[in-house]
Length: 202
Image (cartoon, rainbow, N blue to C red; front, top):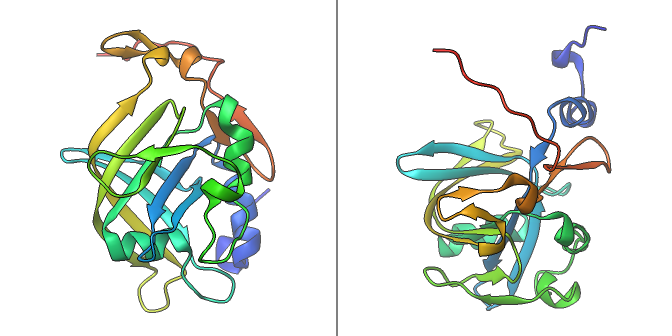
């Protein structure tokens, strides 16, 4: 099969990309609005982009009506966010937080997700998340130029909270204990429990 992406509509391109670029890690992002509403939403267009400075990137699409999602609006205003990784134990809660709510409603409240104050930023941190990164917004880039449909958010990591329960020792995480979920195509997810090792050639 050959796919001419220049001839595909956005929905069809999305379907093929998300079905083949897998598994994708999930950024479970908490932010706070100007009115003090704590927002929480998952994004699977997410990755590490560099280590100096330590920076994560997520892509946030516009809504179908062209408006900005709460996460983007809040991050633009405050310059702060917390990015949590999602364990299998919290997969259902993460999914519940993806519901589209009014701007003045909190996913923490609606989905019954416990949060605690972060240390370096104003947004809440999800209780029980295996890893949580407190971040400041380094840059936000509309993409593509001219008529953007997405915004690339570059988030510099200020502090990380790593649950002691996922550590093999003080310097190493045990993937089986971390037990993260990743996004596949459609409504499918995968876990990080099934691993193997290879030695990189010199």
